[in-house]
Structures are given as C-alpha cells and as structure tokens.
Image (cartoon, rainbow, N blue to C red):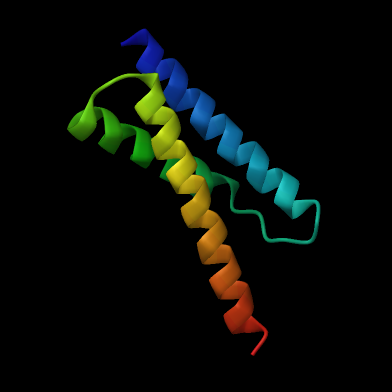
Length: 80
C-alpha cells in the first residue's frame, strides 16, 4: 500500500511540474488538472488492474500521450 501511495504522489507531482514547465513556454497552467488526471488514472489502475509499478508506469505514459494528443488537436483547431 505504501508503494501505491508513493507512486500516486510521484505521478501527481511529476505531471504538475510538467504543466509548470509548459507554462514557462507560453502555455496555460493546467497543473492541478494534470495532477488530478494522474491521480485518477492511478486510482483506476489500482482498482481495476492491480499489478505492480510497471503497469502504473504504463498507465502514466498513456496519460502523457493522451495529454500530448489533446494539446496538439486543440492547438491545431485553434489555429484554423
């Protein structure tokens, strides 16, 4: 249980810091949204899938790809 909580907070902090990094380059700050999504993905992963930290890492990578894809689509739509 301690490992799951540690990974949950690690993911939240990592995504919050990634949003801060994007903000420094002219983006809108979505830190709390990204951290919340990371916590949601972690919670769903542990509730449904179980398994260990490798599956957590895969779930967080999937979230990262999803956020990146959404940002590209929204930016592309805003430029039209």
